[in-house]
Image 1 (tube, helix red, strand yellow):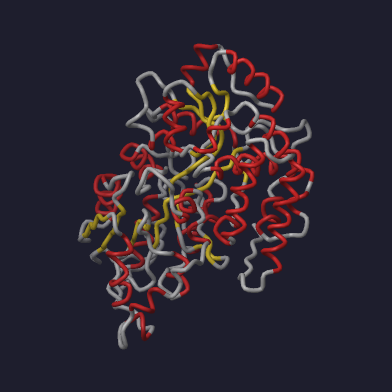
Image 2: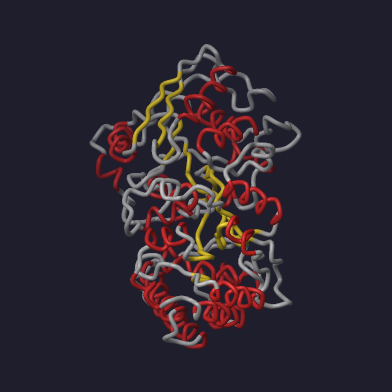
Length: 484
């Protein structure tokens, strides 16, 4: 479903979490896998670090003190993003700054298979694009002391404006998306937004305007239905979470982001708050315009129908256009609209979108040139580096304004406009999706039941609260907590 998904069918949990910027927050079954590979006497087993390059004096231009002649090894996941952004943009920019440095470029689609033995032996690269279906669990790496904390990166002067820190040049929530145990270890780079996707060409032809309120949404659904087109649809068989994302986004717009934080923290009664009930009821009304057969379809089947002009509005993230590029007919113009406001008293405006940074980049703590790895990330987070990435990969980055003036695809142009319109009005992510698998699985079931008319909004909230209470009471489940 995302640009680096390995199969067209059911995605893995890891893929879904990666695309919403949560991979770095998940301590899963991979914990301890590196130590299992380590042998007595290896750096991973003994805790000894590999030799690192001697540093240089720090300065405004070289805040990390990178040694000018220190070699740099870069490992890039070569999936849907390709690797030309590294070989033709970021590496040349690094080389321009440090002409004496030899850069070794490694491209692979099997990050874990390629790098786990190297982490175990202590022979690690200096910067890694840790992505794809075979990525290494970042939480496991952090637990084993294998990741360099990135606070120094975020607090460094930005390349574009040394009076500002790097953290001040990126979209809200970027730094937080890479936290592990409350500290930044992952630099998430690709800006993803979530909402309703539609064909702007079709809407223009029919004179339709994307709805800003749920009342407008229902009125539009009637017009679309009259044209013999399904107004709204999602794939119930393998992607009901696309629909529950919409429900949770709308609930957060009503009450504020604290609701989603409380849901993650299993706060008593969070699922039965008025904001969740109002949102669930509103989306259940939209679900009535969807044929029951969609519960048995997978995402590719629904997305293809949208490309064929048979579905008007589809809930998804900003990977959709790239994922569908081989099936998208000429003249089809992807566009994103935020979830409509549910009430006039919503705390967040219509323009608010759920957005998250994805595609994680890391610097190994035991790299030979970790300072060079940090500088490489700082270059990526410059406007020149980010702009070049967008030109080569077709994806928007977290660097604010970097894509301004670029000739973008219809979907990315829409995404960039939505990012600008939203400003600081960003709906936060949810971590329970990775923390509590049984709870997430139950939410998929109950979302289908709600959206396909088998239960009411009240019943949806009751069943989800019961599932959350069960999770909270289960002492065998490690409880997590977040504050932001």
